[in-house]
Length: 267
Image (cartoon, rainbow, N blue to C red; front, side, top):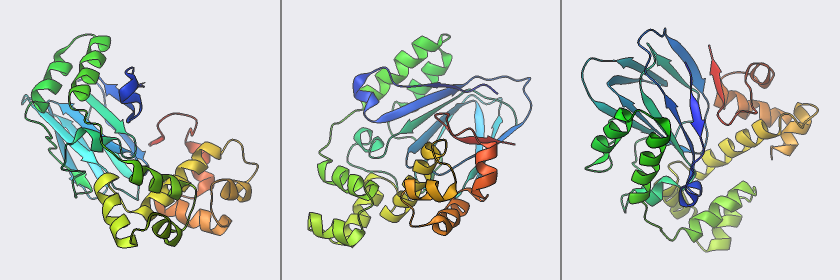
């Protein structure tokens, strides 16, 4: 199954969207399974003529003769998600950066559900996505996709939450962050869930994990990688790593190409 990944061309979208990939339908393709690991993006997947089922930490995608558009939004997960395709179907998946999707959802904020099935944020959403899928050429699809999200863009004042995110990434303690911004920890937690889609502690663990993936090629051993990734020690690193991936770091780094923009484990 071929996944074509693209960075946004539009300068505004580049600030809020990490990128998106397309999968093209192939009725002759066989089953494909891969694991996707926790990250701090909000992930929106849109499928044409497909059925999508959620089973705990597994997503099952199958083709259907019924003409439809299905979409699901995943904002909060701390364990790997298994994605199973009975065969490849037309799909567009968009990776919104932390705080990114909030600028496209009006005043509603991120839905409280960790995984939102049949996500339909706008009255014209499904019709617009259907038009994109029916467009023959990829460049035109990209133009329509970016034009659509630009039409929904609302610039919000997110200076405070942006600074809190920056403080967490700098590994400040929550007590320090709360005192710095004169906010209660409870309020910061509530704000984080609404604007980022997860708790500050979840964000911190995933940020450290993703930092480790970026630093893996530079580190000589796990001890050095632990310190480079803001973990207190190697034991702490291995414990959190196993929780987020269900496998030990040694096996992970031997079987996953961490230099790619998206980190998947195909099985």
